[in-house]
Every structure is written in structure tokens, then in C-alpha cells.
Image 1 (cartoon, rainbow, N blue to C red):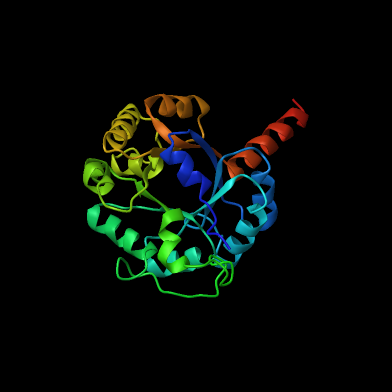
Image 2: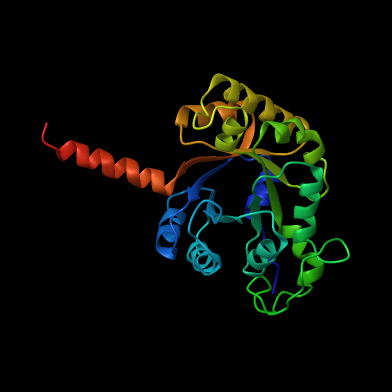
Length: 255
């Protein structure tokens, strides 16, 4: 059988804007629902959510029949977590809180088999279609997409060196942690943070990599696209649910 193509990676290489959503609610039902909504990619988040490895498997399976690409964010830049997610069939990973080129190289090593990396070899995995993908170990890297999050002012200063690491497919800006690192915790809309985000997007593009971001503000999302983001997450499931539920309750409360 053929190695499954990574449509998300192909789109980034072709410069096609990819609009995404964050999936923080665990379980396959929410993931399948989101996969039917027309987004190019949906992030299964295991860093700031209760989602764990068994949940992630079920969520990827639920999304598999649809065009939406499942992206997974491990809880940390940890080779064991990365290895398990890759064996489950994740083709695109967003690695949180990468601070420098050394940490970038560690993430790259975690997705590559020896001698280029340290990923452990297992034959009967979902990633290999249970042993049916011929030459998987030799070719897996072709369809893996590695996105690194730059989430602090220090990391933004190191964008050129992080982007230059062989095997890095894109950089993703984390506005909330960036704001905190700049002394504006909880205020990612602060003018200093917004200016830093614009500079970071332009620096990522100048380094020859696609830039990504998550924002719940539609107008700011459009600004980021204008600045050059190539993969832009524009919402989060739990925020959408809360917003809709609160709005509905407000419409029926006695005045």
C-alpha cells in the first residue's frame, strides 16, 4: 500500500492558505463534527487539554474519512510522546515552546529514524497501515510535517536560527505565552505584542518558512493573513461552545 499523502504539508509548500481550528474537547464525536465543518486543518491539542493518547487515536480515526487534516500538538517536545503520536498515524505535529535551534534539532531528531534521528522503529503500527506500507521506515519523513511553536520574546529573536534547522516545515506563533513573556500576561492584544507578532510573521516568511498562528479574533486573524501567515487557526471548539451557549442563555433571561 502507498504511504498516505500529507495534504496539509503539500498545501503549505504550494503557498495555499490553510484555515484551521483548535480541538480541545476530548473524544471522537467533537472531532468528527469539526471535521465536517470545512476547515483545512484541526489541531487535536494534548498540551492544554485533558486529551491523552487513547483519546487522540479515537479522534484521528473519527476525522480520517474527511478532507480536514488532523494536526496533533503533544504536551511537550518529548521524543517519547512524539514517537507514540507518530506511530498512531499523526502526520503533522505542532511542538510547543521551542526556544532555540538546539531544541528545534531535538524535535527533528524525534521524528526521524536512525541514523538521521532517534525515532524508535515499530512495524505493526497504524502509521504503517499495520505493516502494509512498503518501505515505511525509509520514506515516512517525506509525508511528516513538523511545526515548531515560538512562544516567547527570546524565541522570536531566534527565528532565523530555528527556521534554518533542516527538517523544520513551519513556525507557529503562540500569542498568549508571547504576551506573558513580554510582561502582558492575559493581554495578547497589547500594541507591543501585536507589533512583535507582525515582526515575527515577517521574519518567518523571510526565513523561507510558512508562518502560523491561533487567534479567536476574526479581525486580527485577517490582519495576520495580510502580514503573511500561511496556516491560520481562527477559533477553538470550547470557546465557540461557550460563546454560543452564553449568547443563547442571555437571549432568554428576563430583562
